[in-house]
View 1 (cartoon, rainbow, N blue to C red):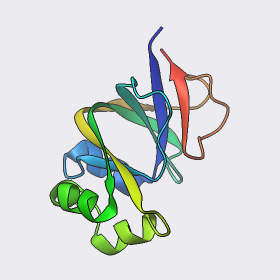
View 2 (view 1 turned 90 degrees about the horizontal axis):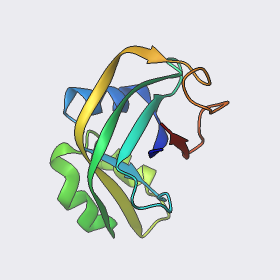
View 3 (view 1 turned 90 degrees about the vertical axis):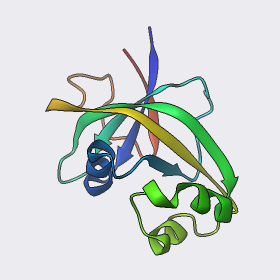
Length: 127
């Protein structure tokens, strides 16, 4: 059984992942299991469905200045939004995205995953 992580992502950023303009997904905290390779993308309201998945190429953990410098070209967000997201933090994480795949038909919870509601940050899922 393969373990993946489901992340809640706002639709505008989720769509940028699948159109290739966002190649890094930022997180203030990261899941403990660093062997995870697949991220399942739950697009938050108004979509409120699982819309695709991506593979993790690598995970960057850096101070915020270096994290922005390393990711800014394909961050999919502005510097002010990056700063606001990481407010109060000294370090952050960026999941480097590879092989993003948008589903032809979005999936409802819990019909396709044993998850009753959208994750606040993340939840482990099993395929």
